[in-house]
Image (cartoon, rainbow, N blue to C red; front, top):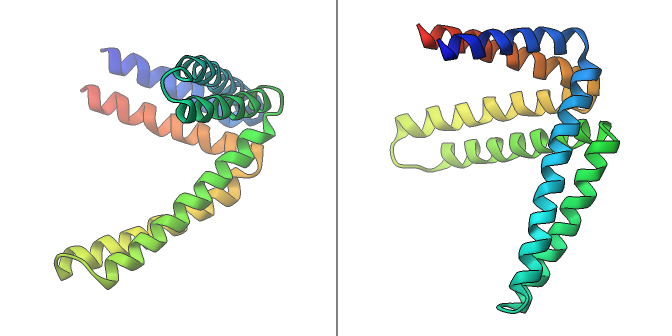
Length: 161
């Protein structure tokens, strides 16, 4: 029952975000930014506390906290940054999948798994790069998030039965 309710909510939210993709991106960017700001604050506190134990680790945590705060505030006040970062991550993941696919084709445990793993890695890498191209534009990214929520909702409903 709970999965059905969550599925219905995901479907409704997915449709709303597909109809109003910019509003969806602003909301997702704000939530992600807030989470990254909280993470940055935690890194700063942990870094200052760690300075007494390990100066290097403490300094690295403080630097990481400052970077997280900059990115977090950027996400909160500049939602297009979310689309840019999402596009970059999808591009990098796609490139890594293609490289892993090629490596799998060139070597591996047995020929059957090597070929299928390699082909799957290359195909998924290409799909990620294509999605990354669309993710750079906030409207397309909002629509992709809406589609993802819609599909997640449908699968949640079927999984609960």
